[in-house]
Image (cartoon, rainbow, N blue to C red; front, side):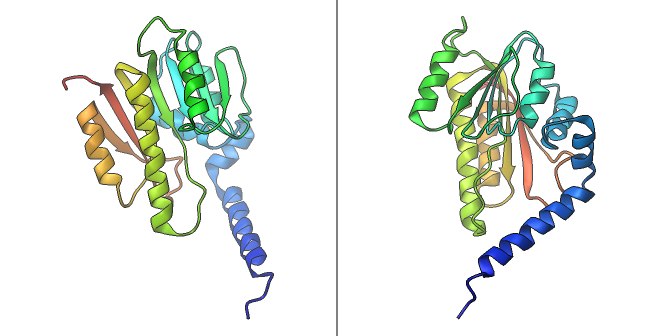
Length: 220
């Protein structure tokens, strides 16, 4: 008969491995040294540096914003636009340009709230950029976790289809595995250019990659 304390022991071992990895991680160290919310700051900074996604007057929708690593970077770059950050968990970033929506994108109440906020724009489709760093709660069952991750990526595409302006851009975290290639192929039908990148700040052992899709609706 298995011992009752085995699940707790496994969680303790996993937590210990995570702490050791954090101590060795140069981006985690840099985030702490610079007072960043999280190491995720560097992922977005590296992607933006390469693809020039952000302008000061952009309207941006960020999905999966907590704890606020990307939101903080956005607030530094967008000085005359608007940032709407969505997550059920608290987002540790404020500011005049940041508006937080508590909840999960895909829930009807959250989408109604976003629609109300975006109707304030004079443009029918007001967003210049949709970002998604959403990730599922990991179950440990790889096939199920992959399916959940791709479902979140599809939600980001739905947000872009509703509110992304022509020539706008979409940045989405993906997990490499089943459904990845099909998602990229579908994105290429809606955007002029699609690139897959793994920024230096993304851990080498992670299956995550980021799709950068630009030129929404151009040439279609």
